[in-house]
Image (cartoon, rainbow, N blue to C red; front, side, top):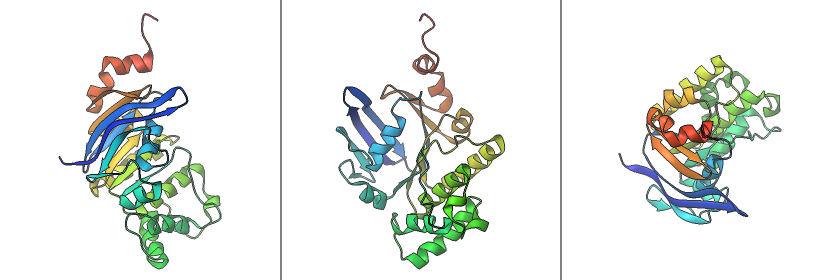
Length: 242
């Protein structure tokens, strides 16, 4: 499988803390990859480096064969990478549809406002917000704001979608619906990297899993292989001799 994104030696430090330390990965087109690890292991920082929200100290990121590690965030978005955030970001004074339209206007397949609004309608229906398109985003619950953010990310027609704990906080019914929705997105051919603590979702969706701890990749493979790795068990549960 041809790689869509290749990461080599990616590093980022904050003072003396190496949040990401020599991280490398190769992810093929159409893959759904889980990026997991204990809290503070560097997962979200890695996403921020990929999207240009943070500058890397070292390392190379190739997306579609093109180096992007020095690009500003808006150019990386235009190149075809979209994301959701662990802390949801919506524009509360705009309508739900207008929020999604912004993603279309500034995404990988930019368009005029009228087309962007037309794009928003089916995407909102897809995430379960179709009947609320013209309501203010401020009226949404936290869970529905997450649905809105996903629709906005998809509106730009990305080839790579980064999900940062998008399934966190969902009840069992919502979780099942969320897993089904991500599965349909993957069927569209969009490559997905998902940072997630819900391991049932990782097992259900991901063909490949990368585990981080203390900024470093400590294991990878299928979810079953990676999560059973002794280094991963130790990272989550600690050393029995401690």
